[in-house]
Length: 603
Image (cartoon, rainbow, N blue to C red; front, side, top):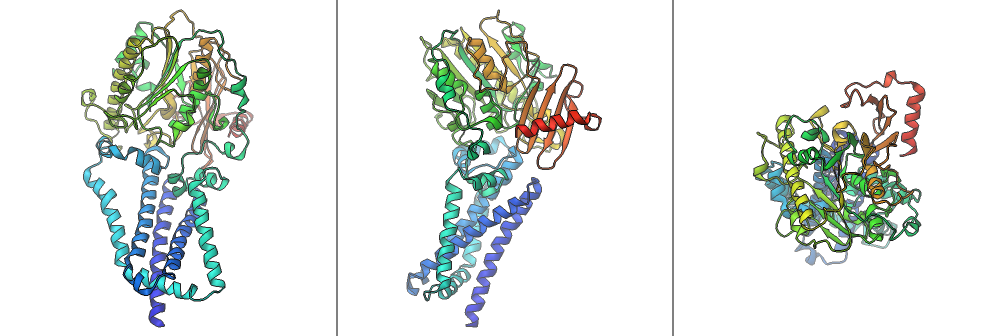
């Protein structure tokens, strides 16, 4: 009896050690990324349920087989336990890497979508094969070996539990089965169903298991039934109206900062083709334009839907929907895998006629922008119908694939500790993107789509290049991560764009629709850049950051608020574009409260 009790205590000690590993990992995760205490609670509840369900399930199975049968398979419980351990390890890797690089937990769907080209990503990110072997193979093998080392303890512990709980019909048996059903049912519900309030609450607080297993929910309002757009908006909108059916092209260069284009005065010649278009009077530029988010998901949808992030529902009336109903052919050409990237393709809607991204390419890796040219081979010459193109380039993004011939600035490096080398690598990406934009214009011309067209060249967000110690994007709303270019090519040079002083992404769809001569949908928030009137206020969102920019002519005040830290800042962007002098203590208290109320009203 004492031997059995000792075996049970050893088993419980092993389980407690596993739980302590998870507790340590989540505590470090919380501390590093300044998360709320609730993430600890959520995570440990899920960990306990997963471990508890596994233990109870194995105990129940062992109660149904004879000793002889399960003696021969005593390593099976240890192996299954190691699988759970590897799952947790993968979750922590996705959480830490995602938060470190993009301030967003990577998902398993992203892992599986991009894993076929892992060797290219490792080279791109300057990660050696030793590190790959260590993280992808050696540590998982160690986890399996650790469990196998304690296979006897695990097996004997389960046998002891089986004798306690399943030797007779009793209350403990009923409780055990009830806990097992509850635990497995809860975990299944959490990991499978996207639309519960509990799941959203966990996702919003960045609990790593939920975040890694779930695709991004669009917005809490969608689930709580508040801000969902009325589907009749599309039904009631004008169809097949009498307007100028120009071809429409939106080119989004991922992570492109406006102030690193030579067109905007950058010291390096990073954008010779775009510069030439401007010199020849073929494009207009917005003097200062901002992204409404520093993350791709929200920014891309803002561009296409003409609405701010908190206003969005699941299936808003988008630019592609509007043009589809007017008889346009809708084309999406994406460098990257937007099927895997938080299921972004699903949010593009059902109006798409031709979709091509990195999951479809046969000739290139998933983040190689040359796949856009591969996609163009499938685009027919223009005939009668007008066309809409959404084109997404990744050359500037840290994970974008760069060719050797575009390595103009040396030395280049992805390593963030060396800011100068990181900037060289970033600028090389701009040089490549500029040349690819040139080739896209050539292809549009050859296929007949450029002759009567309006083309918008912009970015989904900017990029931190060492400012304030930050690198990458989706981490805050300072100028570094939301200052983007907005360039307009119009085949009719006589058209006057009167609102080129200031714009944000929410204005893109409205500008295009107005240029065609169609009414701007009432549900959209943007203003047309054809009009002199401009938005006095714009709103910006990323993670726990909120910002409002107030342009009153004499000043351009930007109010920043972090929901997590309660930090507040105000800058005058007209004299302090890169936010070096926080003037919140000099701002009138009534005006400050007004800005606070505006943020609260749109969050």
